Length: 171
Image 1: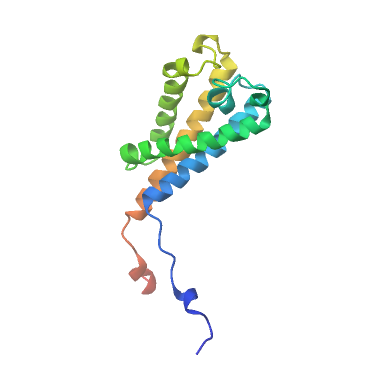
Image 2 (image 1 turned 90 degrees about the vertical axis):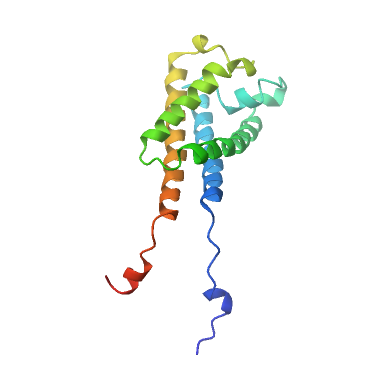
């Protein structure tokens, strides 16, 4: 007889695929907008998360600080929950990187071409430099691949038949 507590034998309740998709969305928003902040800092891009979310509406001294950038990155993480839900409900059954890459390109076009009038601190699309186009385009593609591949992988893993019986039998 062992002296191990009962809690050790209890399994954690598994997260649903939807909950994992939300976690992936928030993490992806934080990661890729953080990298976007670095590209802005090193002048690869004329825009950052703070340009969209904070500087477009507040023109204070602190809106150009790193605190504003960090708050904007967290804001993008929260907005990314909506993006993850959109991908989950529309494309979760798709496999591979291409659906995510196309999703990222569509998001980039939506943000930089369609929604630009909502953000006064962002120059018109044609006024942005080609460096900004390429840098932000690549970031959005990588973001889309991260979101898409991760959500699709979790969905496929969750819906795959369990092989635990064959593993136990050594088959």
